[in-house]
Image 1 (cartoon, rainbow, N blue to C red):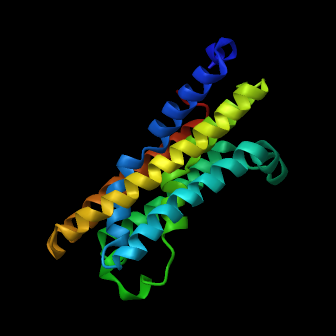
Image 2 (spheres, rainbow, N blue to C red):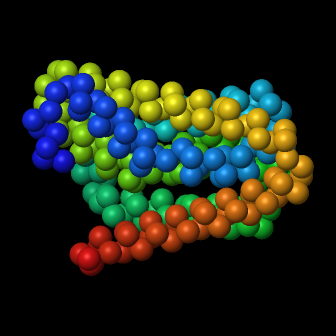
Length: 208
């Protein structure tokens, strides 16, 4: 990221937007989101889509402003944060694979899945948090800071739109389709969880 020190504020903001969009990866979050909102009313699905984007935005902004202070104060390393996120996602993947979340379980109807797991760690996971903290470190000028703030906000607006419009898919598929999406989401989440845990272990032991 050393090249960021010599670019214009506009270029800095565009690079931040593209990088954060790729790392937050809302498209990969779609199966997980759809499996969790299946069975809920359309209005609630749309609300959860924007709540998920807003939750991710809040977490990213908090860590952009106070991330290093929080981690230092609690003596938490980024590797530990990544490992914790991995274990949390693994528990969620087991629930998805066994059909205990989303529309298949009535007891979860009052659970706000927008914050956990959609807001974090699916969207605002360790990767997004670390990337944001790095961009803050390289935002030296006022223009860079404004560009970074705009990029973070725009990324989450796009994420909210993607999640909101994705709910239309649920009206086109039958219950079996929802079940399939849930199982696929479970596999994806499990794979992401294992990768996060492995990367965390590598970080702890300084493995390549």
